[in-house]
Length: 156
Image 1 (cartoon, rainbow, N blue to C red):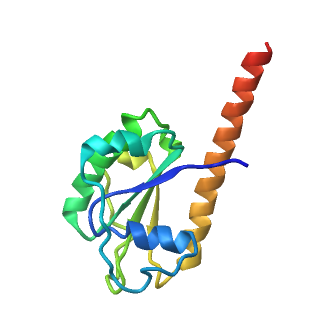
Image 2 (tube, rainbow, N blue to C red):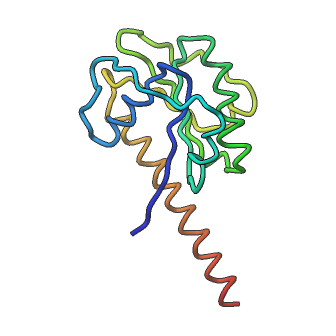
């Protein structure tokens, strides 16, 4: 069985747990804010990142501080781990009742090269799920291609 390790990272109160629970079809924490204990100790991050295949960076686009902070998350979890940009998904998670603006979000380089989706679980939850499934399929395809290349290098 193929195992895929996807990390959900981002600023505090961005909606990481809500999205992860929704995408895994867990009902825990959906509908109300329940703070989770994040790992802010950067010394622990290498252990978390080990053998990861992809990174989902979740942020609240209504908070200007999040737009700056996601650059650090990208640097630590994507660039320093030498992941490809295609292995990263940005999710601009709009909190319930925020009426989030999905048109005027400007991201700094290199974040503007990443695939960005807007999520609003109260308005279009299945669109979010479909986008995540597409991302997950691309990660699985990448893993299969790498495995095939490795096997061919052993054979030849």
